[in-house]
Image (cartoon, rainbow, N blue to C red):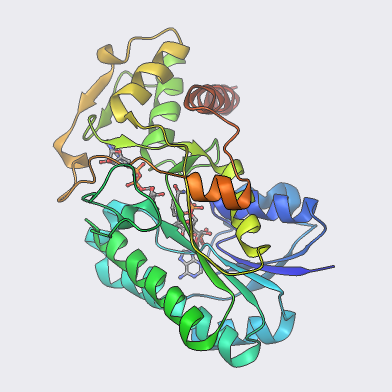
Length: 322
Ligand code: NAP
Ligand code: F7E
């Protein structure tokens, strides 16, 4: 039975990846950081099937100790300070976790067991002010936030350890992927949760920032399968995962509210508080390398994703008030 270590198992992607790896017969070890409250909401249903181990990307010895104790065959580094606006208010912390945290984990692997296969969660935010449309593996980076800058560091240190030490280390450059488990502060979930609250009479408006930004949104469950596929190849290479289709935040609102029989224009208010100091205006992937070499394809369309998230939030909010 192969063993996989997932950092960030309590996050959106970590929870889907843990489910997927369990279904493939893995022993799954999930690294969680110490907190005064329990953060296991997304993995409650599989908690008995996975091993939870404490560790923190800020703490080198905890990472060494995890690799020594569990000797994982594969390490998926999903932990990060992942919310873009927070990266302006906490730029140093973002750099410590999202950038230097990657080096700490790679160092632990290099020192303890360099045969471990390593996946780094790189991001389309690295393309930022895009240099070409659509974006692919060879598109130059131009990050627009401290988060994007930190991810470029994490990406390049992964490439560097692969080339310096011959590690099987790969980066998946993933475009936005969402689900009913997405954090409430990200725009898709903010919209579907907000629309459900309006529908059920708990709110009268939804305050958002830039409605014209465009993203390539897919379903998180599809993307974790792609992460695993990257580590099953003969040679370590980086891959872009995305749908190849782009929509604006406004279009997301239109569809989400319409699914509840509402007109978003009556409820969505633009609020300068949610605009960013520097915006990423347009992201759209060219996922052809992943399709050709991995055989990876998304299975959920934009319309199906919006419907899935709206229906899940309508059910959740209904239960909250029942
Ligand atoms: P998420 O829901 O925000 O989860 C982040 C995870 O990282 C949480 O489990 C969090 O733990 C953990 N974490 C944060 N700081 C840590 C630290 N210092 N030590 C240990 N754990 C720490 O993020 P996600 O959406 O699942 O994304 C997973 C990864 O993919 C992230 O690296 C993100 O930057 C990257 N990514 C995401 C997307 C996307 O669209 N979702 C696209 C491209 C790349 P707590 O539960 O304790 O907070
Ligand atoms: O914003 C606009 C906002 O916060 C999307 C992370 O997973 O994906 C995510 O980063 C867009 C931006 O995601 C609001 O200005 C408008 O243009 O949902 P988001 P993100 O910044 O794209 C990448 C790939 C990652 O790697 C990150 O970890 O929506 N927007 N109004 C808003 N965004 C938010 N959050 N809230 C608003 O009210």
